[in-house]
Length: 297
Image (cartoon, rainbow, N blue to C red):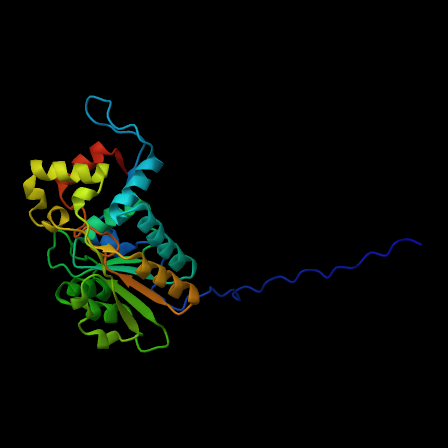
C-alpha cells in the first residue's frame, strides 16, 4: 500500500497590527550611552584605540589595539582582576536588562571618553553629573524638560538626582548606589529602595602602580601643569582600591534577581583614581590621541 503522508495545516498569516513590541519594566532602558551623553552636550564622535602610534618621526609604540584596550582597563580599574569584575557587573546588567548609571561629581566628558576607549560605552545607560563646571559637565541643549532637568542636576546632591531619574522609587523595584564617599548617602530617604553601598577599599600609592598610561599622565602633568590645575587629586593622592568583596557581593545580588537598578560613582569607586582623565582639555586630548594612536570616528 502506498505510504500515507501526514497532511500539514497551512500556516496562518499574522494579522496586521497585532505585533506588540516587548516593553521593558523600566522605560528609560536604552542600551548604551544616548543623546544626553552625545548630541545634547555637543559630543558627536567616538574615541577608539588603533594599532601602533602616529607620533611625529615614526617609531615608538607598536602595541596592538587589543593590547591597548587591555592595558587601559588595568589602568582605569586599577588591576586586571578589578577590570574583570567591573566588566562582569556591566555585562550582567545588560544581559538582565538592568539599567546601569554612572553618577559623578567629577568630569562627565572625561568619563564618556574613557568609556569609549575602554569599549564599554554600550554597557552604560548614561553618565549623570552634578559638577557645576560647564567645561567638564557641559550644558544639555535639549529644549525638552529632559534637558532642563539634567542642567538642574548641577545644583542637586546625588540622591536627589537618583529620585529624579527613577521616578518610580516607591514601587517594588530595588536598586543599589555604590560610592566611596559616605557623605553621598544624604537624602537617602528620598529613594529608600535604592540602597547605599559604601565602597571602602585600600589606599595604594600611585608610585606602586606600573602603567604606560600612568607614566604618560605623570609626564604630561609636569609639562602642562595648567591641564591638571582643576584635578589635583588625579596624581597627588592615594587611590581608593575598592575591596573585591564589595564587587563579588554586587555580582551575587545581580544574579539573585534582587536588583533592578545599579548606580555607581566613578572616581574612587569604579576607578581607584580620584579624578577622570581631562579629555575636556584640548591639549591633553591631542597629546593622548597622538601618543596612543586614537582614532576619532
